[in-house]
Amino acid sequence: MTAALAVAGIKPDEGKVNRTYLDVAKIPTYCFGHADRTSKVGTLHTDTQCETILAADVKLEQDGVAACVPGLRSRPYQWAASTRLAHNIGVPAFCGSGAAIHFNRGDWRGGCDLFMPWNKARVDGKLVEVRGLTLRRRRERAQCLIRT
Image 1 (tube, one colour):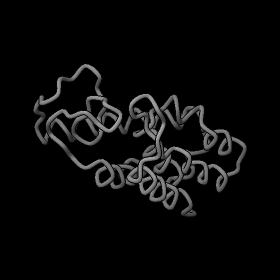
Image 2 (cartoon, rainbow, N blue to C red):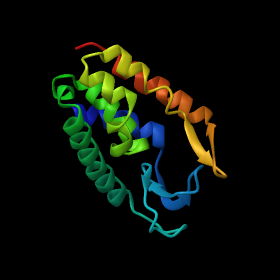
Image 3 (cartoon, rainbow, N blue to C red):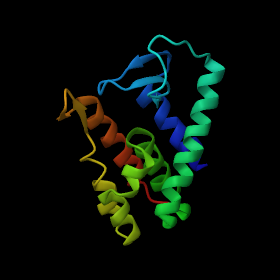
Image 4 (cartoon, rainbow, N blue to C red):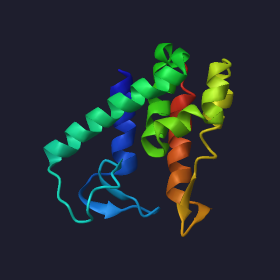
């Protein structure tokens, strides 16, 4: 259930681009937001490859966030939202985040609220707020606040 909830949010947030492109932070990215610094811009990936890559990414992210916040395993909406956030910022960043710290203290609402600061990207060496990330964090936070 959690993986399906996460994927349902990741797909529209990321969109699917079959050719490798540079994202706003100039990181080679393809499919559903799969960042791969070794991929060459313009490399083509099939729809099947994109689905396979997304499934593998979500599995790693889901397992990673549960490893640093074990309490997520019994909270599917918070786990899915955390997986979505980790898909975008990386599992190590999620695990070191204020959201993870608050979740581990049992402060679920506080953790959900701390998704919002992750609305910036490094552009030309500077962290700048990105409207698309702000909107994305709002959607993830809304999912995170759903009670089970």
